[in-house]
Amino acid sequence: MHFASDNSGPVHPRVMAALTAANQGYAASYGADPIMDRVRDRIRETFEAPDAAVYLVATGTAANALILACLTQPWQTVFCARHAHIQEDECAAPEFYSNGAKLTLVDGGDGKMDPDSLRATITAEQSRGVHGVQRGPVSITQATEAGTVYSLDEIRALTSIAKDFGLPVHMDGARFSNALVRLGCSPADMTWRAGIDALSFGGTKNGLMGVEAVVLFDPEKAWEFELRRKRGAHLFSKHRYLSAQMDAYLEDGLWLDLASKANAAADRLSSMLKTLGVQPDHAVQANMVFARWPRATHQRLQDAGAKYYLWSGSLEGADPDEQLSARLVCDWSTQDSSISQFAELFRG
Image (cartoon, rainbow, N blue to C red; front, top):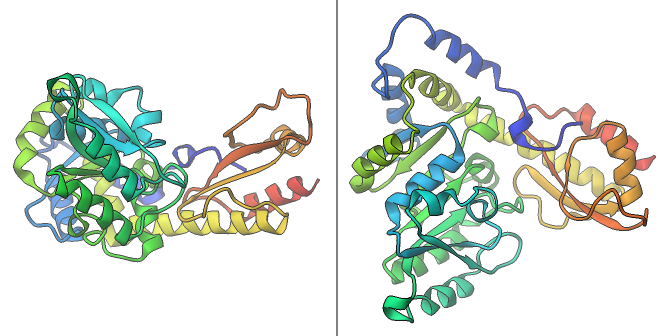
């Protein structure tokens, strides 16, 4: 009953096998390995972007922060959702790597940015001349931190506003695969065709040991990214072990299969909760479920070994009937038996 995070799940066996295979003999370092050549070709083919610059880093925070540093001047601000990962969970890494650029938060429901709010927020900036921050890139989280997914029309609406102001757009795709399989569209449709300039293409939350791809659809920033990656201590010498993971991930559509399994498990978990009278707080569109139920039930579940995060409140409160919010996350390896066991404990 492990629903704490998709970071907690195991590495897929095919990825482990690829790492073992890559461990044979010698290979060029710093991304000059032949496996990385294949990864670049596969990502360019997958995204129908033959000119894209492709790099690998070990964490999503590194991918996001380094991309945004390339797109942002220190005196600018990044526009993002109020509950974006770059705002709430990256310890000011985007600000640090961009040498002091700030984040400006944009309102919207269900973890998203609202287009009207984005336009109003961008318009409000740069109204104080030299005394205020200047307008910088827009960052879209897909899937959102609420487990919701921007439709293609929603993405295009946001990028269109950004382009009206001449601003580049970054997509934080830590759960890109989960969003993609939910929409049933092509990677190109959800990125550069919709106005995205740079993508953090996640793998760690979807069955990899630890690797994320940076995809720059406009390669103009490629050399700057390479310099920032090195200066920021994120250029791996034994790069083939990053390459091997991403290569296995892309081979024969493994990345889509793993995301489909995680999403399906979240759908089953959500359906189970509904049969128990619990309605999710947000539409379940990726691999996360947010819902609330009484403290006493939380206590019973967690005492029995269920692993998930409380999103509001504490088990220490006195009222057993107080409704506490939880976040439950499924990964590719989530078993039906875990969901059934959770349901039995929930019923008491």
